[in-house]
Amino acid sequence: MEGVMAEGQTSPGSADMAIDVRDLRMRYGTRDVLTGVSFTARRGEVLALLGPNGAGKSTTIEILEGFRTRSAGQVTVLGQDPARGDEAWRARLGVVLQSWRDHGRWRVRELLGYLARFYVPYSTPDVTRPWDIDDLLAVVGLTEQANQKAKNLSGGQRRRLDVAIGIVGRPELVFLDEPTAGFDPHARREFHDLVHRLSDFENTTVLLTTHDLDEAERLADRILILDQGAIVANGSADELARQMATSAEVRWTVDGRRHVHAAERNDPTAFVRDLLAAEPGITELEVRRASLEDTYMALVHSAEAGRGAAGSRDVAGSRGAAGGRSAARNTDSEVHS
Ligand SMILES: Nc1ncnc2c1ncn2[C@@H]1O[C@H](COP(=O)(O)OP(=O)(O)OP(=O)(O)O)[C@@H](O)[C@H]1O
Image 1 (cartoon, helix red, strand yellow):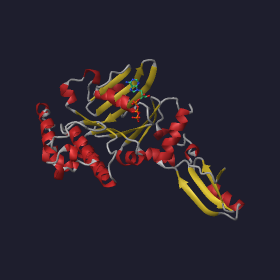
Image 2: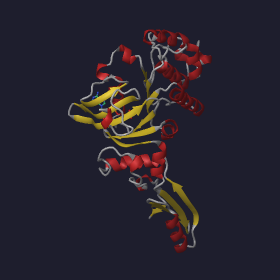
Image 3: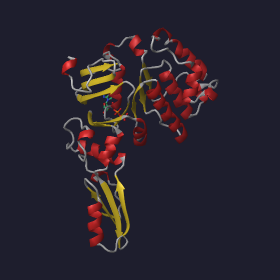
Image 4: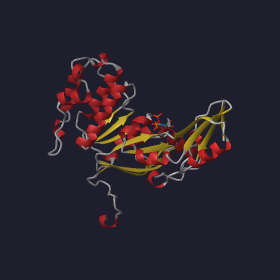
């Protein structure tokens, strides 16, 4: 089989591939919530799964974690079908749920030490399980809180404990569901360093969901945008950024009136040149590149309008497909041209 595969492709379960999802479908009753999701993640890769509320992110992740049975499609996670994953397979996964609300009376070190014991039988010649508790406390930034009860931790510290619980077994693949909700900017930055460390030094694959596009941009090697049960974009932040560069917004004022124009494709220079020639009284001229948020909004809007719904959009190969117009933030006093 290997001989006929295209460059960069890997067979399901290959050593380099952590996740391989093909045509995943999920139906709740008569309602299709995943309509053919396909993507892969290599070992050590960080993927961010973005999408509006109800897009199907949690459903996808729960299927990959083996907590939900899919309706159709092929799924391979660390070489196994999650629907048939055994304890040894589960020990290689880390799951960070939205919040760990149990065990509030446990002290941080005790709780981690208790959970760590379950992973001892799952050490392999390559991976010593679990983490050393002091190292783990240091890496998640909870050394000073080691002897504090979980219920007395701040929201951000509690979230770090969630992460510590998720990775205590030194997983090869970590699922993080909105990992930094409630973090202050400093804790968020430290958490980002932790994810980079896991991926760069431990070769851990990370699949995270977030509604924070800045976080997705900072953390992810690749961003998947899921909308209404289908992947509408799949590319690195750079590839998305290049796509963003295809649209820009030009704002200017004439006689106290604010104008906005979405310059489609290429560069807005020609538009600005013509504008200045035609309107000598212009003030406050501003050219603004579309942000990741603009691109995200445009892609989702486009997919929902049915224009971009023909399967996954590989942004690396389809620049300029989404106009920035729908993402322009309008104000009442603005005139759009
Ligand atoms: N057990 C269930 N039974 C029926 N419908 C469900 C069930 N779980 C989820 N759904 C529906 O499936 C759709 C996808 O839900 P899912 O939780 O996967 O979305 P999500 O992208 O994770 O959303 P959010 O960003 O709000 O967490 C939603 O419309 C939801 O109402």
